[in-house]
Length: 151
Image (cartoon, rainbow, N blue to C red; front, side):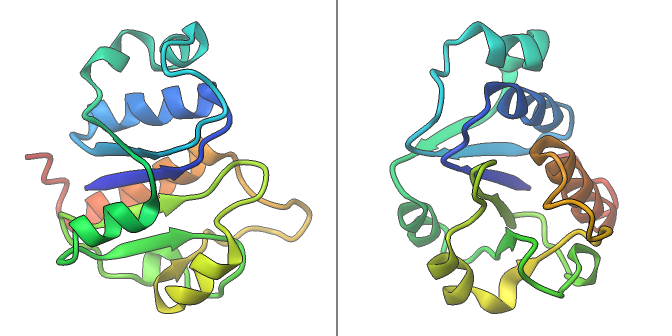
């Protein structure tokens, strides 16, 4: 599996997601620009001693990543769709994309891949769940569907 963070802004979220990726044998893809430096101690503190083991890939653009992985499915986490993350049939090499914490995935990307937009149901009293929590929720559903094959 693959988690993609589009222009991540908060080092603690990226560190937490990196730790989850290590413990699930999931690749972590980061799309520039970042709101922090990858050598900041906050990212390493959140990822604990797992950060050195993250299968980390850095990309200049989301389009570059999609073009390089034409045979994989890309799913886009957003609050702007009705399709639940649990209604999708995930495959082992799929990519789950999350946008910047402050603004989410841009509308033009969501519109371009509308059929692959997914959401986590929640009450309407808040805007969204924390990024690292959202990544864990969706990743574990995808892993459940492939019978937790961590190979």
